[in-house]
Image (tube, rainbow, N blue to C red):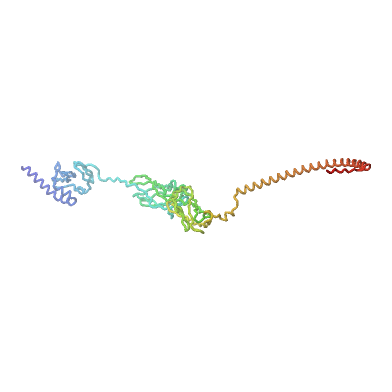
Length: 452
């Protein structure tokens, strides 16, 4: 019973001696105040010992305090400082380890570790380069086949400087370097500093409309925590490309001989000479004095290189000159709406009058009678004239030949007649002489016929 009372008195004295230290610990952290309720732990040898072990008791963290025989108290307070004033890191549980400024203490109170002078540097984050701004000229877009100047500003966003920086620009399938090189070298770029680089470029003819990419590559080195490292990055910027509007429309030709009340047509030819497609083509005709069958027509999309025609059928409602307008709207390869207008003048005449005594037949116009014969009639006439000439020549030649033959026959007949006449003359002379002789000797008798 006496021993038990002695132990109680010793514990009470130790608690009284530890009260000032507890008050100091309460000023640092509430956990130290909670440690005042824990019973004091004495070193095994009863000497001057200090305890820097935190444990868990019933889910509550408490700090152990030890008192020596000489009445001096040393404790581990919750603010991370030991009796010597150096930093400590209390262990999470009783079996863990805590690190003080001059060493480490495991959960069993055994000191081991370093001297607290470890100055090994810790490497920082990798420095990155970004493009903060770029420019391709004052125009909103660059046209296919045109030259432009590309400039861009890049900045070192890291905490350390970079060196041996190589910058490469790649225009892809839409752009090319218009003279010079696409690779640039920079010796050093400090942390937070920026630089600007520019180069001439050209838009290739094969480029399509829209935003086209340009790749800028960065390859560099840096030294951090005494170690040299390298890094690279690729950054893309986009440049808008536009195709020139080469959708061509020919001027419409007004019809000839338009008549009031009779339907006639006017056509408009088109061709897309551009590299891109034309979309939503729509055509219309407007004017006073005409009545169109389909005043508005939707043509649709026109591919690159395609052509066609747009025809309008309309009927004049009044005679004279009629002013009309053909309007075509479409979207170019950049998606912008374009509009083209073509004014035309149509001359219409009144319809031919109707003869009431001709059963509704239209009296022919005098101009139709004044028109010349068709070409085939001229050809047939020419052939007929040629045939007549040939026939005439043949007939004349035959007649001339017949006359020549008749003349030859007449000549032969004349010769034969002359010879016969001479012989007959000689005989007549002889007969005459004989008759004269008879007449001289005898008298001629006249016999008269008897009368009935």
